[in-house]
Image 1 (cartoon, rainbow, N blue to C red):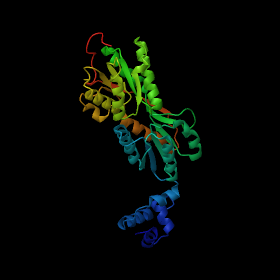
Image 2 (image 1 turned 90 degrees about the vertical axis):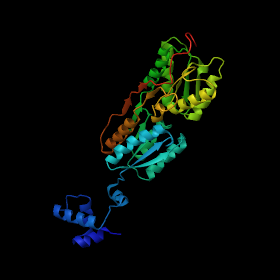
Image 3 (image 1 turned 30 degrees about the horizontal axis):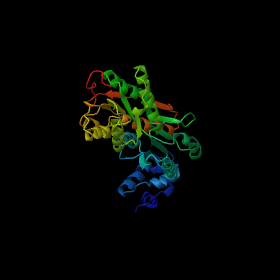
Image 4 (image 1 turned 90 degrees about the horizontal axis):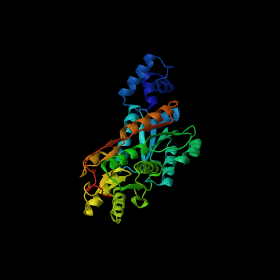
Length: 338
């Protein structure tokens, strides 16, 4: 393997001069730098990232914590992060926390041990615990679709879940539905709370009243959507429409309806939240709230890179969702149906 000392002998300079030249130091003349780099290229020399990190105290790497890579939503967010990171010479370390708070904290600490320059956390379950951790780690952390209050390091990029939920439920009310259920994610924390508030607000504004039996919280998975929809359809007076916390749950809800002989949207309308790429391919295609997933990843990565360069970005970026109407929603089957 070629070393700096080998290049130094070929260029007839000291190995410290070679090191400076490869780092682009102004202390080495342009002609000498050009010669050294030419020799290094011809001999196939590659700068060690570990060695460079020891000198610069930077590893040009970013840690990314996600709930699970099995979620298509996460994939689109990470794609945005990767696009920005690679364009600026950064590599990514990706880890699942599986919605486990203890595991999330262990993953973040392991990234610290790997000496990553910064950390991005998607859908954190322990956001408020990052404040003391940040003071200890001194590594910038940006949350995606979550936030933590106050403090110098409180940086986040998230969707406006409340206004998105309002759009979804108002769509159902405008279609004529009066018995509308909410299928929530028991691990959704802040986002679930905001979507539930939006749901309640539209019901109140439409003078429909709140019916607790129409609210079910399960896991944020297709299986959770199936179990939640099964419970709702078993009610003596089932809902005519269901607003789901996320598309994966809505897809499970549609499957449960089909297995129970209930048609969508004939017997019950279903609305999701995310607009995953597969949501336009379900039967029926899913009405949903579109989140700018790729953009969220890009903006979070840019925010983190600005922090790493010593800048002071805006603490919180809140993005708006958009209602995408497809085939899973329609007016109730009969006028006056509840």
